Image 1 (cartoon, rainbow, N blue to C red):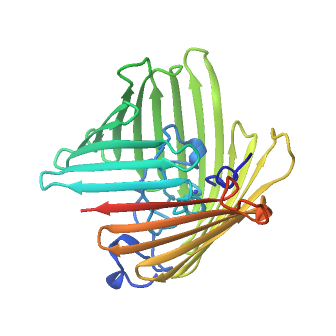
Image 2: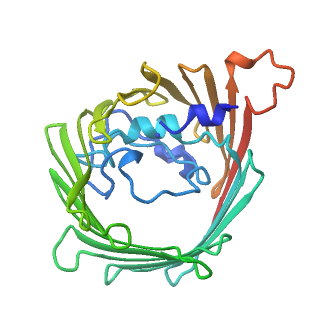
Length: 352
């Protein structure tokens, strides 16, 4: 039986002086700053999946980090995809030391399987040399190592090596990424050493709020382009619209994000898959409202009748709780309303 969580899926103020730091707000008239992210498009473009994406709730997402959004369509993706922890119960604990070492422990209990996954991560940052070393170990005996070097050969140039290994198995990955960003230009190239190997590159250019991006993957062994995609968008201080052509231009996605007021955000996303067995467009719409400087609520609903509700509260600096509920409105009269058609979850974050 298809449940609410599966069908809902990821589609992602007032003055900061009086706001709790973990629920930072931004005014609708803010001017975008400098581009800071290495991400390009929607999650469909990402090559590394974070299985703990529901562990850490997000603060209020800005429309732009600079000439580009963090990724094209990120604002609507965050609005519709984050702060809805109805997939289970999640816990995240973060601590840091004066010697620039940060520790993070995450755990997630899946509401459907009741399985508990966890990860222990240690990160050392050498700001003077632009280096970051990260080592993680999961309960699945999965070791992950990441080395980042920024602004060494040129300003705006970053190198990133992300490798993983399963000691008692044959699983291993190695992804080498090069990112170059300047005002009006953001490009990235990475080589997946053990899958193909495969070389992927993406570029985004922007001017006067208009954005244009493209991505392509080349399989070195087969000697052919294995995947390509394109995106266009427009971003303004109060709103952003984006159109993606994904999966070799077989799936099309349109999204918009609107900061209605300092306390209210709205957005929607439509997806049309030309290869889907069932015709039609998938549509999801949502909104976010700040109750005060320490709490906000979110709601979304899709054309399958699945309603998602979320509530996030900053209990004190460094402590935050989120609660999520997914309700299949087409199955409200079922005898077991708390069964697989509906889901309830929570997420807790501690940072010190």
